[in-house]
Length: 105
Image 1: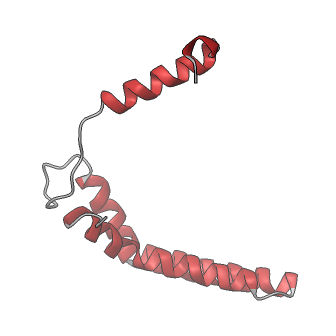
Image 2: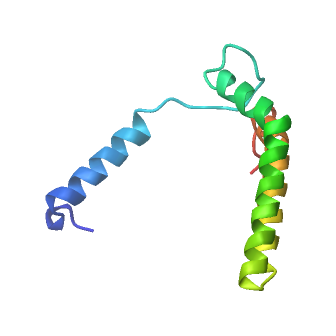
C-alpha cells in the first residue's frame, strides 16, 4: 500500500487507529478489588445475573424461544432460547475467571 494513493478518509482512519493503539494503557488480569475501575460494574453484573433477575431473564428467554418455536413450527427458536439462557446463567462465572486469572493464550 502506497501512502500517496490513500484518500483523506482512509488516512484519517489509519491515524485514529494508530492513536488508539499507542495511546491506551495496558490492561492485565489480576485480582478483583475495589481499586479496579471495573469493580462497580463487575459487582452490579454479578449480583444481577446471579440472583433472581438473572433467573427471570433465563426463564423468559426459554419461554420466548418456546413460543417462537410453536409459531414457526420449528425447534430452532427454542434451542436458541435455551442456549442464550445457558450462556447468561454461566456469565458471572466466566467474568470472574477472566477477571482473576485472565484468558490463557
